[in-house]
Image 1 (cartoon, one colour):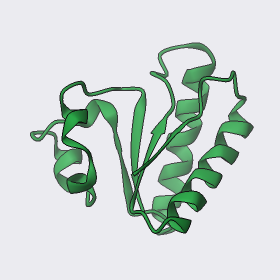
Image 2 (cartoon, rainbow, N blue to C red):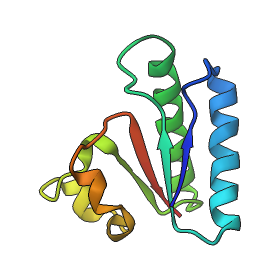
Image 3 (cartoon, rainbow, N blue to C red):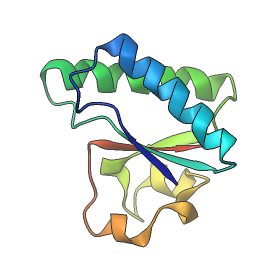
Amino acid sequence: MLTRDIHSNNETVSVALYELKVSIDLTRHDRDKLLCLITGYGSSGKTHKIKTAIIEKLDELKAKKQIKGYLLGSELDIFNLNYQNFSHKDKIPKSDFNRPNPGIIYIGL
């Protein structure tokens, strides 16, 4: 699983979207099926705009069948329906379940 942090360097929304594309391409190049994207909590300010734009782009990519799906870190719970429907849940490290992080998005390719 490739992990990329796209919120720590004061990125703009356009830079974050570019980083998303590059991260997906790198994950595919490595023939991996899961990407962990750190977007920040998105509660306010710039990280909110970045996280919202990333989720909108992921919805678009999923509709075009360019990704299989995504799971928000806050949904990392075996009783959550989104978690249960996430096709790559078995690739998420067990250690991530100890501290679910709402600033992370898991992307299945």
